[in-house]
Image (cartoon, rainbow, N blue to C red; front, top):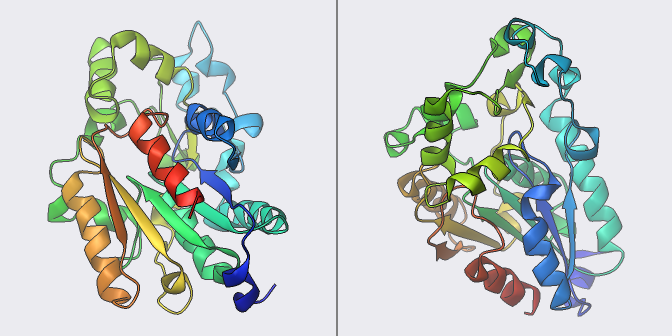
Length: 292
């Protein structure tokens, strides 16, 4: 299908959602349910090694073997950003047979969204970042962690739960089931500020221990001639303590400077990093984007 055909396609779009680190397609199940009940086409992608392909080390189960957890090999160690992109490109191609596609990513999922935008810009009608990394001037997620705009991030409160050396194991392995109350409270502060303790416990049981260590080091920059041609929306989470609003604003500023003729549409939602993504404000944003 040509770019001209894409622009004139009046069929309802498919919303394709990409999860972030240590997560799965479950992250937006409530959002998809609500949008589907309103008549919108939606699908969430499980990236390789996640969701139905998720790996849970034997040492992660109760009773936990903490020594084993630090050394047990992970099949996710060999997964790269190219594998993530290939998975999402396949979903987009299949969805595109039925009409336009809006591709949305949360958190680390923004890196995959940008790379997919570089690969198949002609198949995407819009890209959406939900409190997500959107690399432009700097090449990687890791590079942005050292910027002044990230100084208020509470990410170290989550990484205190890392139980193995990523350089050795090949994955960032987080013990979401830690019995240490300081770990629980730190994760709550960083990811889920206004959640109840019960809601945080439910969240922790949806997260997966392993994430390929290569992803934060992969070049995730959107390119002006490909990704930069796609209309984009950035949904700021104003109560985010992992990707501070100042860093989210830096992503927007850099993107607009790269493509001044294609400025970012900016929305804001008063939510912490993990949403939840079925918040009415977020549902309304996607319902409106899908109805244009």
